[in-house]
Amino acid sequence: MSDQTTNTEQCVLEAHDVTVRFGGLVALRDVDIRVPLGAITGLLGPNGAGKSTLLGVLSGDLAPKSGRVSLSGQDVTRTAPQRRVRLGLARTFQHPEVYGELTVRQHLALAHRLRTKPSRVWSDPLTGRFLRTSGPEEHDIAQLLAALSLDGAADTPVANLPLGVSRLVEIGRALATKPSVVMLDEPSSGLDAEESKRLAAVLKHIVAERGTSFLLVEHDVDMVFGLSSRVFVLDFGSLIAEGTPQEVQADARVRSAYLGELAPAPTAATAPATPRQAEHPVTAAGGDGDVLLTVRELGVKYGNAVALDGMSLTAAQGSVTALLGSNGAGKSTLARALAGLVPASAGTIRFAGTDLAGMPASRISRLGLAYLPEGRGVFPTLTVNENLSMAVQRLPAAERNAAMDHAVSLFPVLGERRKQIAGTLSGGQQQMLSLARVLARAPRLLIADEISLGLAPVIVDEVFEGLERAIAEGVAVILIEQFVHRALELADTCHIMRRGSVVWSGAASDARAEVIEHYLGSEIEPAALSEVFR
Image (cartoon, rainbow, N blue to C red; front, side):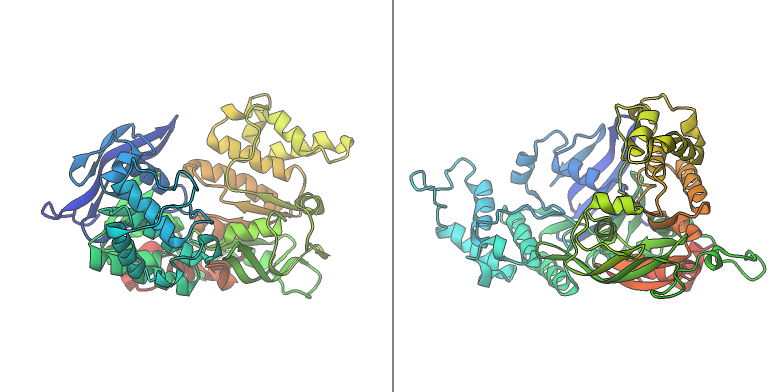
């Protein structure tokens, strides 16, 4: 870790030795973070690292088990969230929390009055109409509209605005409380490249003109590195790195957290004689008949937000495909679209020769396409056996017991616990049961979304061993995974996604350097790159 922030630097927001526990899970462990006055500070970390938990502690929504939070030098560890707002702390959320029927100006006025007139009536008691801005309030809001380049949309209902502008409205609402520091939670989520550039320009302008500090939590690491003067990185609830963007970008611990302990690429002398890439090649559509899944120019929208744009891929029977990318790249949206859980706005999906357009998720599942979403999909009050029994109800009665026995054979630890209540299993065992429930139905293709999330590395090994047994039996897999090295070890082919599109595709054995570039940027010293693959 690089040198600490100097004692002479004035910090507007600080956390000292913060620890948070949820039952037996340590979500944050002795975390220290400092946000200097008049600067943008970045907070990075893979899924499950503890970023949202830390924001909850800083905002007052979560009480730490131990540690202290300071705002402008004042201890606010036990201070309510609304009191922190009045002391100068503001926050935005990953999904914009706006009132669609209110205009941009009214949103800013509401926030401004929270700070200046917390006990005053904000609407006419007779008509219910929003009270117009006037005097100093009108002047403050006009300045803020100009700073955000929202003058032209000031009197437009937010429901009629594109997502990128709605993001600016939410930031403007935070700024209207006249904060000293604003915490931004994934502000570029769902934005296209041009909207993200506009957002970055606005943040730079606000810092320069108003001296406001920002704590930026963002999946777009290029934005974080480009805007931040200092970056903190969390992994498994602990602070693993701190420094300038250049120092953090080159830190081997950061790369390990995002990408896993990537082993050196095999040489001619050490490479196996028959690599997995040769066993299950992903073929082109219309090839030798082995193509199981074909996706062409797939698009998905959530309202005005483009989540997938022109996504194409193919997967063969028995193949393993790694689908990689930073948070917000569109991986889970693709998985949900394939499973029939979100509708496509464009493009086609064909599975086992069948067009899936408009097909309900239940029928897609019966065709043999199984989706295991992020999180542990078990019935916590039922036993292991009862969970498996629920999963095989659509099979003929004579086949159900054999299917359950086979699922348990993939994860032997479950065989010892068939009568145990699922909610009392460890997190890793619950994840194994989730996988076993899906595999009990003998799918042709399994889409597994972040099966290692929240698990210790030794437990991840056990989960992956069961998955490898299923792969060896011929199940095709699309693997969305934060442990990149594990995904690349299993996969034949890799697709790297960014902002809803594929930015690189190729053999998994060739993906290492591309993964580094697309996760953490390309401006890396050769020595640092070699350190990652040592």
